[in-house]
Amino acid sequence: MFILYETPAGYAIFKLLDDNKFKEIDNLYLEFETPEKANKIVKLKHFEKFADTTEALSAATAAVEGKLSKSLKKALKKLVVDDVQNQLLVADAKLGNAIKEKLSLQCVANTSVQELMRCIRSQSESLLSGLPKKEMTAMSLGLAHSLSRYKLKFSPDKIDTMIVQAQSLLDDLDKELNNYMMRVREWYGWHFPELGKILTDNIAYVKVIKLVGMRENIADTDLSDILMDELEQKVKEAAEISMGTEISEEDITNIQSLCDEIISINEYRSHLSDYLKARMMAMAPNLTVLVGETVGARLIAHSGSLVNLAKHPASTLQILGSEKALFRALKTKKDTPKYGLIYHASLVGSASIKNKGRISRSLAAKASLATRVDAFGDDVTMQLGIDHRAKLETRLRMLEEGNSTRLSGVKAKAKLQKFHAVSEVKTFKVATDSTLPSTSSKKLKANEESANAPSPKKKKVQDHDMEEAPEPEVEEGSKKKKKKKDSLVEEVTEEPAASAEPEMGEGSAKKKKKKKTKSESEQPAEEESMMMDESVEMPGSAKKSKKSKSKKATEEDE
Figure (cartoon, rainbow, N blue to C red):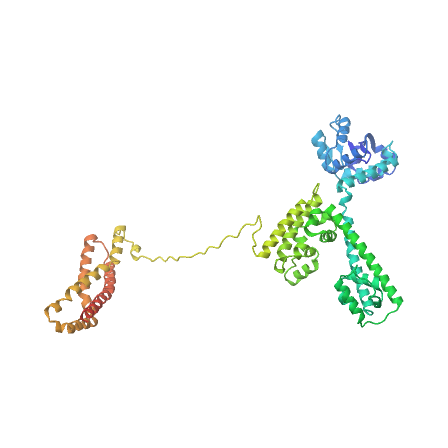
């Protein structure tokens, strides 16, 4: 068995002298207590030394990625391929798979191998003869630095720690300036209270105090370099009628010393702001164009680094900085916040109140893309940020005008169509319920037609009535027309059933004859039901026909 041992100086290949020791790993560390015992178990077969740090770095990166380097391939071909029956003990399973694919060599990587590697590492100085300790230490340090730079893709402009520290210092300076300004206004306000109401700019206020001192000196001092003509005139007029108390020279000296501190801190703050802007443009140009250097630096500082910020989704970036409000809203089951640190961006600030949520969501989506390009892209320029900012400004303009359109990639909602339900009621046909074998489909249709055909009888009745009605009018004179017509109306109203019965008898007799000629085996019950239906329908039709006659007759008389 051969053992592949990786060192910063090169690859060492040991030969395991006693294979039984490899099987008993529980007390294996006892065999490596001294160099003499270690030399009895393993023996150095070959050592492939790296030529320089570059070769060591390429071999180390290949081992990290689980690939086979050129130097290792050359060493294994010389020694191990000759003995095909031997096994190779490897610490990394991925590297063992790569060796097996390339050289068709059986590799073993398990817990026993890890324990053996640990024991060899404890006696590496004695086992690797001919390699000084100082040289090994120097190679280890150089390879560690080179590997770290390779992993991080080291660049002085890409150090986001400087941005985090600069932004934190900038926030601290702003707090200190606010505290100092509050102290100066309260302190000097006892002597000249009207000056604080006239001058709202803190730096101009401090410079006036530094230049003037006592308020009595304002009338003889030229303030044109600090203030505008109108403000200068107001300050001089207020100094003449001021209601402030008198202070000593020592007091004004201390106040002016504090003013010097404020002016120097403000100058350093402006210098630090320029430094932060330049660093942000070098490290995250696209993010800076979208949200500004201050908001971008605060986002990076809040997340810890640019890479961490790039790993956040757009929804997290949108509410970054408002974690307390978010968890309070989730706890109380209220609306979650729409924006965090991104609220201070110029695009969100220029939007109206109703559109701040929409534009902050769009800005967070574009800023998330820009951050990923800045963090992981090569040869990064600010063109992406400029294009995205132009699109966001166009969208903001459309939102303000009320012409909101759907974004690209979002499907339009389907139009809702009204559905009208049509209820269909089917009636049960009694004639189809017959179980007699003689009934056929033709007979059933004939029965249905006869049952649903009362209209010709009504016409016959109406024709009969129309024939009977003009007879009295022809026989009698014109003077007796009204009386006879009235008598006809009375007869129709009093005896409708009597006039209908003989007609029903005639019609039913005719129907019976027709049915007998068609089918002799038809049931008498069906004939009776048909006669009953006809008798129900006929009186109503007779009444209607006689009433219509009477109405026509009265209209003719009139």
